[in-house]
Structure formats: C-alpha cells, structure tokens
Length: 254
Image 1: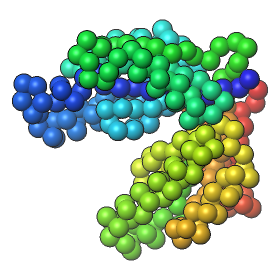
Image 2 (image 1 turned 90 degrees about the vertical axis):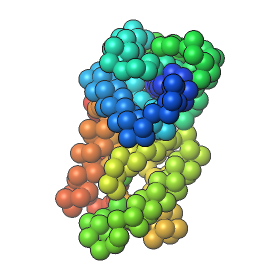
Image 3 (image 1 turned 30 degrees about the horizontal axis):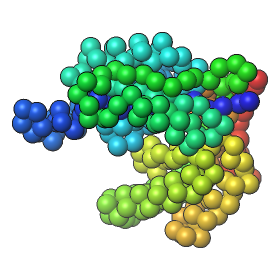
Image 4 (image 1 turned 120 degrees about the vertical axis):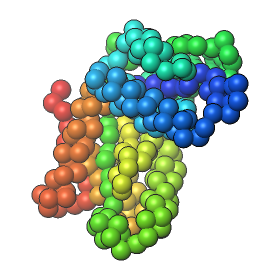
C-alpha cells in the first residue's frame, strides 16, 4: 500500500522560554522562528523532504524516505545551533491529513509542549514494508496574479490570498489533504488519494465562491522533493500554454 509520511515538529517549551527571565523582543523571536524554519528546510530537503510552516513554533514536514535515525540527527544538529530544542512525531497513512493526525498523537503522547523536561523527543513510525513511500503534491497559483499585484493595494491582495488559502484548506481537509501558502500567490497541497476529478471540482468552486481562477500542477513520486519538482514542472506547462486544461499531472517512473 502506498503511504505518505508526515513529521510534525514542535519547539520544546517555547512559550515559557519567550518570557524567561523576561519577555524577549518580538523582532528577536521572529528572527529565531525564521532561522529555525530555514535550518529545518535545508536539512529535510537535503534528504528529499519538504517542510511547511504551520504556526511558526509548530511545523509540518513531508518526510518520506527519511528514517528515525535521520530525524534524531536533525534534532541533535538543531540543538547545537539554537537555544531551544525540537521534538518530533512521525506518522504515515494513505492520506496526508490522517498521517498528520497519527504523527501529532505520537508527539502528544510524549508530553506537553510546555513541559520543561520534554527535550528532543521522537515518537511514531515511518513507512516500511510491505507499504511503500508515495507522495502526491499539487502546486496551485492564481491566474493573472500580476494584474492584482500591480493594480490593488498590497494588503487587499494579501487578504484575498488568505481567503483562498482558508477555502482550499477546509475543502481539501474533507478529502484528507492539507494545503499551505508558499508565498506570493502560490499554494502547495499534499493530495494523496485526491484525484483530478475532485481537483477540478475544487478549482471550479474557488472560481464560483471567490471569483478567482486557479491552475494546478500535480506531481507524484517516492519523495516530497520529487513530487514537488514534478508539480512545478506540470504547472509551468500550463503557464506556458502547453496544456489544454487548468490541471496537468506528471508522475515519477516506478
């Protein structure tokens, strides 16, 4: 059975740390959070994974092909760089949302996020025989977004992008998918088990509800890196006029 593997990443005891011995400057915290994301992205992506920002102190990674020992190595390296440590939960399932739930439960079983004694914990399980690694990623963007950027107030465009993200996230979750904003007008969704028919319906509903057209490139492969690369390639094909519809799919040879 093909499964997607999700790692949930949480900064240990982060809330109390931000105010000990006194509240730290907000700018300092923002810099720390951005650096944590950057370092995690570099480490996971070097192994074929992909990290998404969730709530800054919580992150979600697609980690197919990355075993538990590699997770531990990342934890050790992060602890050497930053004043806070990270704990992780790993889960796998046919759908991304379900894998995330399994990973979250595994992490929560190790203790509270505010437990000062919880440091660098790792729990859960990776994809293993007879199951096999498989990731399906959909890369979406807004049609003619440059017109919005060049004609609308920046904050108004930001609100529209936020509305699109919320709409996509709620609808994708019904079918076991998860969606993240990737900056600009780009969204990436982990869409294992969500076929082209449902994606077509979703893009149609976005157009009807929000008045915004989207196009989507779908990539399928053994790792997040492979699937994301193919999704971007498929999206580029649509942008360049090489596809007759607003959805294109590329699949890694197996």
